[in-house]
Amino acid sequence: MSIAITVELPESVAEKLGIGQKDLSRAALEAIALEGYRSERLTGFQVREMLGLETQLELDGFLKAHHIDLEYSFEDIEREQAALDILLKK
Image (cartoon, rainbow, N blue to C red; front, top):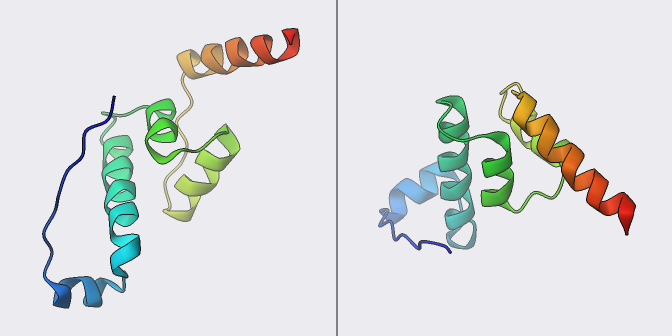
């Protein structure tokens, strides 16, 4: 299930940010994901889910591009191992 949100932003502000109208939604989603991760309200798995990142490597690249170190919990390792086990059984 997803929740849609609408944000009204003056054109002049969007121009200052250098974000085109098409990319504005993605930029807002990424900002929410980054802040959620920084504040430890979101896990790496949740950020991946939000942004449609398929691998831990993609998440790491995204976070590094925004100067954030990847926090990898024991639960993340277990989840990755379970996913790998499923893939290897197919």
